[in-house]
Length: 559
Ligand code: ADP
Ligand code: MG
Image (cartoon, rainbow, N blue to C red; front, side):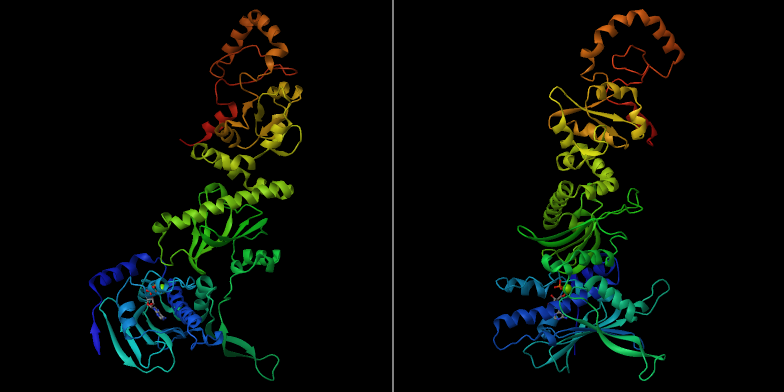
């Protein structure tokens, strides 16, 4: 028997990896299952070009067995196996991926399903195991070998007995310590749920013996525990299926199974991108607002899969803040399984996917607005505020993306209208897009300042949301029409109405104005004659860009 040291770099890497790359212990199972699936893929790709090799799907599977008495967990596969050299090269040198080499060799062939490429996944086994034993027989080899390691100390390789081609990895699960329990990795139900979570869409069956309660034979009320082999994973993910095969119920079911929300989604978007970047995605626009949506606790993000294997629950880089309400998942072949959060942020593929997703969401919202107005309004009631925040944020950088999605209550239509609808209805002599801010529609309707505009027959937009006026200030104009608050100094209509009369009277009342200003001292800075009042005797206005409503909000904000 030979005992070998890991290479020096490997030793350090191993320590680092066990302690830092992976944040959750349970992912060791994902890594080992992915390797097993890769190993089966490799036989499959060989069979494509080797006439002597037939790939009969029924013979290929992964089996997980837990043995509580002996504290062992085995992961068995019927894949391509490893010979002495492979064991030495692939398991003895950390960060050297046999799968990446295989992919490169087979570039011409269709080898893109293989998950591994990083060469560290295997070592995650040491997060939960004291001893890892790999017994493997390579395709086309007569001898099987046993590789064994207790972690950083090194490994041994020796010949051993194994009938069939493939690999059996046995983990001696760690004893519990004071602060860590490892027992869960020997519990069948727990293991099953880990497999479901990360590896549900591995293309080969993952088999497990599960104990279930069954009716005793010949009895109709007595149950017994029966051990039964089950296939744990569902294998073909819904997002790889053809849209035409799927019904609205299928998408709803997936939404609920995934716990994206408790409501019914308003709309789903199924993307299968095949261009500059290859990915599949199923996205949802929820119907109702999650309870914590407008709070700091809310975390945006999509589930991220690398080739069918879950790598992140909430990848926030995939969604801009203004579309943070979108739920769903993305699967891409071009991502690596062991990629870290920090690396993801700089991943070019991921950026491309994010850009692509953003434009798909926008397109979907626009068509909802155009074709399913009622649904869009429902959506807007829930998430319109977020779109307006989007317009306001980053100094209005996203206004081009968002301005056509905005809606405001209209004085004329008595319902939500888009800016485009407003502008297209403007009479020729109307210079501005008029708006009025207030707590509620009823309150705004009573504002004296609105009279001049509505009497003129112009449409008025009602801003009842805190953010409205701030967002509009960022937009500045829409289709070259500037926005104008009814409480601003110059409305662009008053002069022609009754301007002359007002200026004539000005001096007559100076004494009264001085008296009023005195009485209201500290509350108003000026009292003057207004040219815009019709049936109301008095109104409040501001000077400059900040209106009364904005001032209220600014004053209420914590400094
Ligand atoms: P990666 O999967 O990113 O290449 P791993 O550390 O997970 O890195 O695995 C290292 C290498 O060991 C793999 O590339 C593969 O060549 C080999 N390997 C691991 N597990 C198996 C297995 N079950 N069957 C055959 N080869 C395996
Ligand atoms: Mg791997």
